[in-house]
Length: 430
Image (cartoon, rainbow, N blue to C red; front, side):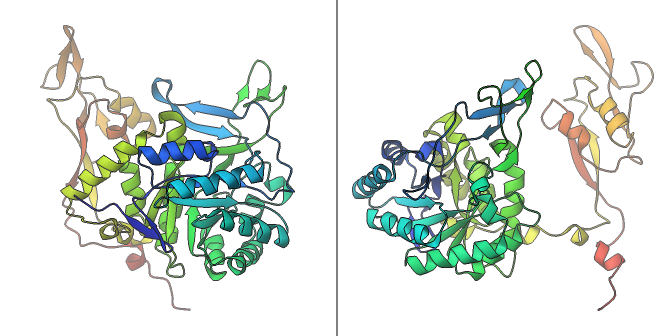
């Protein structure tokens, strides 16, 4: 059986599955339950200095729903831990005493250097394995000059990271905000300052929606609302791109803990293939409970066994060489849509989609004969066909088709050698 253990920034973890700093890591009792069910690590819900005044509001969450009413993403306006610091520290100490082989990371956020140093010392005395500097929170705390206000300021990232590194010998991770133009700049700043690792992404600044009857955005607090942090499966593509961009950057050689829309073992594998050593989960647990780690563990183990990976290090970053800039893609590679006549049910969803939103490459032959019709409940339906000359291989038809593997994209021989845009239009030397 494959070995799931990993080491991130010198921290050994029994498996790569960690809980992100969020409501699921708010108390020691929650984290102990999670550890019993198979989670290897937890990043404690962000702690502030004892002088920081933290008061949360009610309500705090809003959602956007996809197919069948399932939640695709959530917006939260909750702040960092509003529980007494002493209470949190006492619980951290108890958890580490009972689960010495599991990983407990203190997520921290505060203001002045003295406060950072005192908070680090207190968490260190409680027995944490490392620190995660929260430079990502996009609401509430950033208005006080913390969270994403730091994560968007390269100089502030370097300064506070250096403060932390000088205050402790334990590993320091920097949690980055996605609310920035180029994720590489803050990531490089953290690396320059001596960070031992990076964690990303934090939530995306957002406004979830508006009550069109009461004219109030969601979630509503006494008839008013504010922007919050967007999370859930909908943010996964954003997180993957940022994780991969950092993983392939030659200026950044420190490890990554990946966060964003992770709910199952396949998500875990994707983040790790794109460079993450550990993964952190929040909303997946909020909607599925701690037990989802069982699917992650069993599924990832089976996938590793099937692919001959005896350890996580054997595949971490394996997809990075295939993640390139657009200019490095082969312009002469082509695929076209192929409709499997035996699987086609004649719903014709692909036809208006291609006609109105694609490249007009799917046709409906006149009449119901000629081998292009199917019968549904005794009624003849015309079966779509592909105009191969017009098809550009955009994939749209395969995405809207309700029948698995009915429409596939088939490579065709163009008779031309591979060629990139850079080769076709080389830039003049400077």
